[in-house]
Image (cartoon, rainbow, N blue to C red; front, side, top):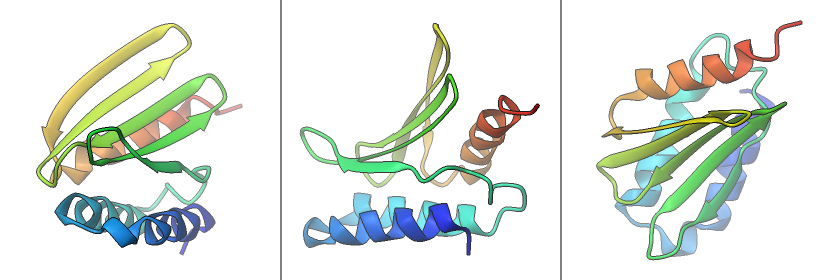
Length: 112
């Protein structure tokens, strides 16, 4: 397992006192991402609860940023940013391939 996913699961486990379906959706997403080739080089994400309930997972690499907000167990709001260029999208939490695409975008930005 990649170091980042171990650390992400540890951070989620620390928040498990308030485990609900939203927390479980975030846990499952991180577990699924662990199996994706090419994502081992990701940095450790920052994981935190968000105001009003839900969870946020965010990755920073250079001037790029990917943020996933789980406001509930069914929906993810994604934000991705490259410098001042920022975009958002909302999609079902089950669409892991959308998250994989964003994280591969994050990693490609650091190619030397």
